[in-house]
Length: 130
Image (cartoon, helix red, strand yellow):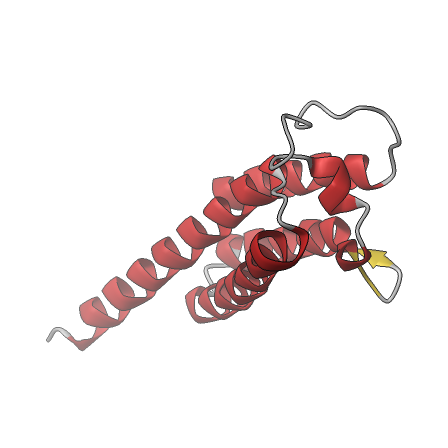
């Protein structure tokens, strides 16, 4: 749940960059620039900023975790991780620029997926033990 809240905060920071034209704190050099990534054509899905989708996704994962829906939490985390990996491909191969907020978010969703898988497996192991 804590990681989901942290992910939502990082996504909110990326959303702020999406709507900003100011020099961003993560405009580090030619290879690290959140503004370029968050203003690219890949930063929206049908007009909805990817960062807003991230906020919604993290809030959903947090709710599922709070409700102890381990299987659904893992499914949502894996879906988020798959999309994050696609976005990593876009940043690496197409834009050739990385967003610090995006990379942090990708690490968070990976950790959530790993922890959700471990918790689901440990829960099933305990249920099968006589």
